[in-house]
Each structure stands twice: as C-alpha cells, then as structure tokens.
Image (tube, rainbow, N blue to C red):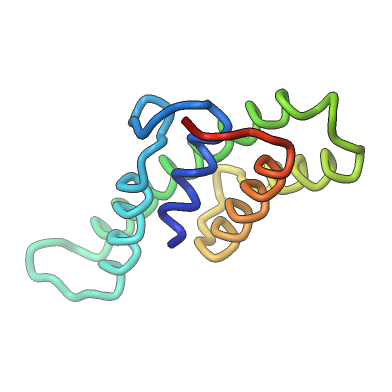
Length: 125
C-alpha cells in the first residue's frame, strides 16, 4: 500500500496522471522495496556492497521525488494553511536529508503529507 500512497502524493501535488516525469509511478517505490528486501538475501552473483548501493540509489530516487512533491505542495497550500500545518510539513521535509535512509519514517512522511495535501483540496487527475 505504501507504493500507492507514494504515487498518490506525487500525482496529487503535480496534478498529473501516472508518469515517471515527476516520479508519479508506484513502480519507482516498488523498486526501492525490492532493493531493501534484497539486502537480506545472499547471492553468489552480487556482493553485499552492490545490494546496499542499489538500495541507496533507489531510496534516493524516491526521497528526491518526495522532497520535490513536498516543496510543490507547500507552495500550493501556503496561503491557505495555518502556521502549524506549514511547520509540520516543513519539519517532515527537513528530515529528508541526503543521509536519510529510514523506510519506515519515509512511509510515515508520505502518509502524513498526502493527508495534509488531500485536506487542502489537491487532487489527482
């Protein structure tokens, strides 16, 4: 379900259909999930370092799209939202630094940000 929540967040903010242009595709998130599962799998064809690199690369892609969606969403609701909501969204966005690789925390950020943007009428195509 997290993959769809990710896609809905990006689609809602950018008012777009399913596309890779802004990262509005659940498969981008699913690739990151597969890479995370592969971290625990032993493989004679790929080293642990290769699996970790693949996870970090795919996680960074998802994180990049979430950050961009949050920036765009904040610009769209800033004039209508109260200071507490803006502060919460900015705090979530500030957590998404280059050394952030916590999937559970990312899922929570996507879920909460999506709920805020939905509340302010940002809709998907």
